Image (cartoon, rainbow, N blue to C red; front, side, top):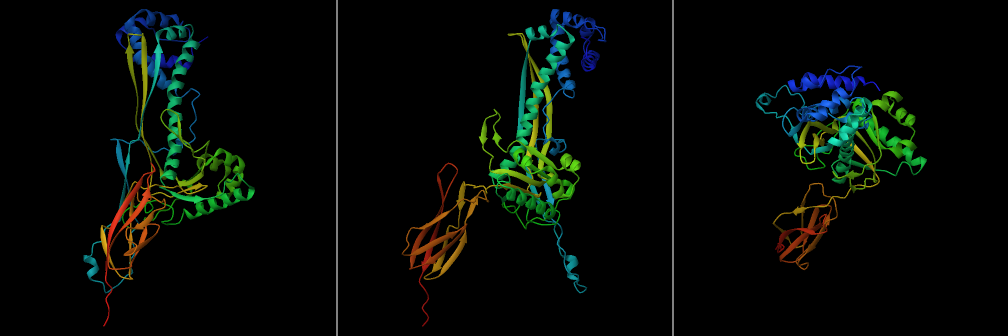
Amino acid sequence: MAISQGLKNSLNEIRQISSTIYHQYIPVIDDDTDISKLAAPVLQYPEVYNEFCSALLQRIVYTQVDSMNEFQNPLRALEGNVMPLGYAGQEIYINPAKGRRYNPDDFAGILQKYEADVKVQYLIKNMDLQYPVTVIRTKLKEAFVSWDALDSFITGLSRSLYNGMYVDEYRYTKALISSAYINDNAIVKTITNPTSAEAAAKQFIQDSRFLFLDFQSPSSKYNAWSKVGGSGRPIVTWTNPEDIVIILRNDIRAYVDVNVLANAYQIGKADFLANNIYTVDNFDVYDDEGTKIYDGSKIFAMIADRNWFKIKPIDQFMEDQRNANNRSYQLYLNNTKMYEYSLFANAVIFASEGATVKPTAISAPASLSVAESGTVKYTVNTTPFNANSTLTVASSASAKATATISGKEVTVTGVDEGSANITVTGTNAAGESVTAVTVVTVTAAVVEG
């Protein structure tokens, strides 16, 4: 069989940048070249074999990727630009300036300082994976029986390396949504499974249509900055309609006709499918070994600003290592990326229930005082800020003071002069208790005479 154009180009491109020794033994490959002209010197001369494996195979792996049958990651379009430097970055958001009423008599205002309300979110590299594949000399020798066999051998290497990478990128992108849900770092809208009944499907369409419209108005309702304890005043965000995307499960898309979705967003069906809707098999989370570590069945879909996804390629390169002990070459495809989500962008997750976030620590005032028959309130803080599991409160001496808790607000009532320890208790993810103790001093009521 004749050599394919892609393989021929790759072999000749490599020859152009190879050593003099390689040129001496390897001819320019054309349509009439017999494969033995390549195979014989590669298998006969160690220096040619080493250069072939080190340089040629790496080059072919790169050039073959565009023509092979690769896994089509449907979420790859959500990736951003390459991070030019470093392994960490930051996202800066500046709130809209606050207007003030014009006052012609305000001469002092010129001396007042009006600082911009700047928010910062720090983003880090969190994918650093290496994909190895071993080239055994005997397998390479078997591939040299024909150009077609060699082409298939190289394409197989490419598929192994790149499809492994693309599958992981797909999983990492889905895991961004799951992670935001698990950690309650996004707005969650509780709905009935849209596939359970026609009424539930219609309600899902109505809800998503409302959010599609509401995202376009300046608002603090749909970003997670304040929810996770971001400093300062809430931020105001909005999304242009062309930047609003929806990611939903395949079973829901199959149940809810895509024409209905397109009509709901008032977008042409073709444009809607190409630019605004992405479907996934599930929202499960897997570790780097491919083992499922989280069941994402509670998550149905997400509607978000495209800029919520902070996916940045950092570095991608190939390395190789010759192993004389077993006559093999090891190829390593390295892929380093940042997979983060923005606290400054609109995003709503549709789920069957909200996520429960356990506290890792609780803090409260060390001490306070209250008069007999009086009350005092204080707020406990949790780590993380948005921990939302139930907290309890108890008094060490209810004859002196009692306490109740609603959410994170504690109300202490003085009963009799003395003191009591007020303990707020939560349970962390390991089932262990975390507590915060406040010493309350009850003072005698002032008797008016």
